[in-house]
Length: 437
Length: 90
Image 1 (cartoon, rainbow over the protein chains, first blue to last red):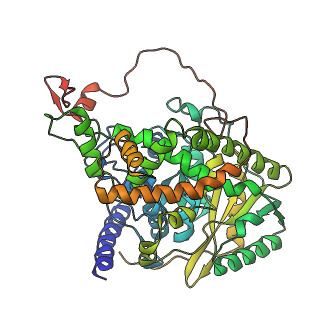
Image 2 (cartoon, each protein chain N blue to C red):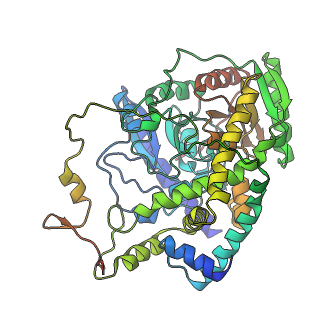
Image 3 (cartoon, rainbow over the protein chains, first blue to last red):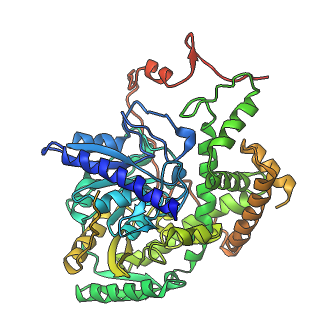
């Protein structure tokens, strides 16, 4: 039990520090925080990893620069799973964020610190990053709104890569109006990130979705309380004049393995740059063969889950296995994009619960096997794999803990999701816990 | 996954693993890859892209410019008389 009390004391110190900065802020500025894998001048950027201890980038990531240019003050960096490798923010070298609704439970991951900051501080906007559900998951567990834009809508310049074809910078906050406002701030083409240059111009406003599709395959293996809360939320959507239809998306069952293969394959190459020379931790024993030098610092600095994902990704890319795993996963991603787009011919958005269960206790997480942890991403992975924009909003409270609902739209239709979230907020009142710093 | 395979993967990934880690990760990767075998049932698609959206080539005017002073970058690295210090190559 003493470990949890240490965590609580540490979290209170961090909360107090954030609150003091926000209270002292000039009235003309708004406050925001950034996940620790976004580079910001004047702050360490460690991405939750010991291998980056001491790394201070001399520049701002594009989304951070845009927030500052529009009057924002960066008040801090938020903790995360190492390089984004996790669902509960427990895989960090720099502290575990505690769920504001229950300090003995997880904030979700990997943008867990962002979820906590968005929940705790009124008027706060937290920049998060999602590769396989790292914005939706924390938004669900922390009871806030979390928008993951279309892949390529927000520049990734200055983001410490996890999976280049999957990473998206997004926003978390207590209200969809703040998210909508700052989504406009951070989006747009950036010559420093070519994948952001194919995007269409944002419209003035979106269209309220009139027809929602619920894939029956996504409703399996849910916690019964989450399932029944979700059904109640669908009834409420119907009262708002929205049609709700059950559909079948049989390829959803391939999403989780395809995602983990692509994500770890890309991560295993991206993390090759952490070798004790260029960033963060520097190995001083130069009188070693370069292989021993690089291997030593990586072995000592990477955490358990980082090593597991590097090994998995390296294996999936090896000669003899590449076609079976990596190339097959790319084909599955295309298959899923087509399956989503077929649904979008008749419906405006796909809706599911965000997570299959409410925020778990740390002791429950400690007992989970690796595959169970990966399986917790089953509902957030499909839109992330396919680059579709999605938003998580609170839709119920079970045992005092929030339940999230996730809406997915076709590429580039973030504004439709924000319209839906805005309409939802008029019909459903969000709750936030009182936590004194 | 046998010991030889996990050792080969770890070597390629530049990771030193203890005997206990070797055994544990071999079992984890076995479990993960067995559960991923569902992918064998997916139809073999003939089209795929490396990104989920079409990416276009973007060219800018070729004008010299400097975003960061190189000295700022050198300050972040272990340098000696203008050279980056590194390990032996042989």
